[in-house]
Image (tube, rainbow, N blue to C red):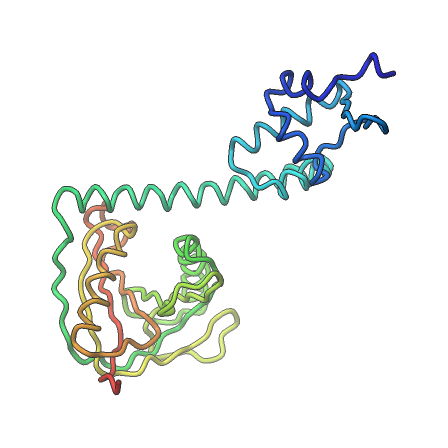
Length: 268
């Protein structure tokens, strides 16, 4: 039996892993040797373990957490596919965030911090028909699309008249799990299935206009929040975005978004 097994050194070379990694995976219960010599403590592996070892190496190279890899190895084919697709989704979100950061860095490198005109004014009370979703900061775009996909069919089905543009409502603090909403201004409708109604009070607001991709909205928010704090004001939730020109109407570089934040005089 021992003649058919591989020492940890040979197994490591075969699987393109280090001995240290194999010992670590053994300690975690991720990839245990077939046999451990009681006297010497030497670890021995079976040739058929190479597939799992190579899979671990492949997934680690993709930066998958060891806990996720352990779940995938222990799962059946269907469950394993679900685990890997979930990781693929998280990776896609990370790539999207990194792409947005690259675009913003390029814009900053080319022209410095963009200049945004921030103005104070008074906003009228608005009554919105809204739908809500819970998402992560990285999933705001997907959360927005989900809300729009639910809101417009309900408005169309019920025949509720509404006034463009669509509004996005967001919290001040981007927490790991947060609620976002998309709404349409309407004077009518009450208690519709799948639809809520929210009144946004009027009052003093700070606002600015962003022209360009939604990925570059953080640049506008940087200018907006900086101006609010410089003027000794306190921002209030919810943060509001009005989509004056959306993706269905223009290319990314021509999108027009109005950013509105209610403010109060600071008492500090």
